[in-house]
Image (cartoon, rainbow, N blue to C red):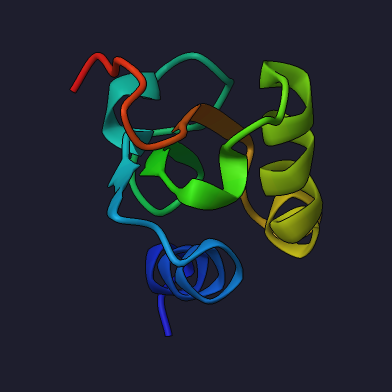
Length: 93
């Protein structure tokens, strides 16, 4: 299973989102680190709308996602941009 698929599965199971996009942005970071060519699965953006985030602060939402994906962040994911929202809240996507 790819890292992207694992992230999508974990987020879906934990938050039952009404909208979810896990975007591999690794290619955008080529050259930012020595010897990094932008290939692979190291940089992701998570856009998620879920009722589970209702009543949670922005910080609490980020912590919830980071805690859920701790194994991926420890082992292979270098960067994770998180755009969480509750239903009805404005999003940039």
